[in-house]
Image 1 (cartoon, rainbow, N blue to C red):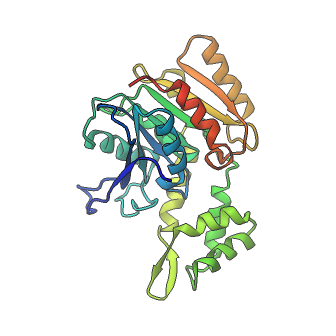
Image 2: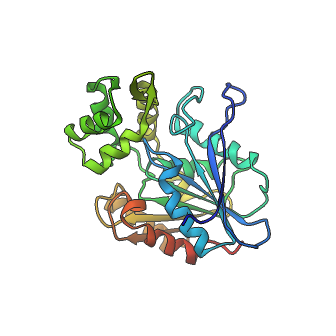
Length: 291
């Protein structure tokens, strides 16, 4: 049984009116508003729905919070975003969504996974989008390519045909390119029907520009001096983490010096929302502020 009520929004896309697609999940409880509001920002090639199970689990454990599943620009139903396609644009998109949703005076937190982790950190510095907590799930503030597979996927897409006869054929091609079956099937959710064929919902060239900007971004200054009263909560996977050991030690050192920056280790691989959703829910149940 699914928990919570869901509403969604997709706004007509123009350069002035563009707004991210999102899904607002509200707990089935009598807790009066304003509840706390937790925004989920997914990883590269993903969508807000990737975090549905975690969001619903959080609301079961903490019915004083509601959740917003966001489709970042060029992802999910937000593919018609106008340029420039940069990490800063992603953060500004989220900040505008935060201000757009009613109840903006409620306590709020941002949670970003991988690519979404850097977006969450940058969003917290945007005027009007300050958050009590920013949860950075197996991401990194450091510049440089990561081992999460997005770059390898981009290289594979450049070799694959633009269309497929079926969604399964697309998944088969990704698997044949060296990715596990579960990743291939997840990637194939980005294929949309056009007449009798399936094509990628995004423009690969635009996605490449966005990914390269993610690699260029150095957010250590923001980590060393978090905006306002924001707490930065890093969750690092115990296997295949893209947060390097030296960077994890740097976060621990900042914490020991009294900075509002904290590091949690959680059993599982980089895709913690799949490997250990219960662990994420347990941390959030304990540590989300009381709304």
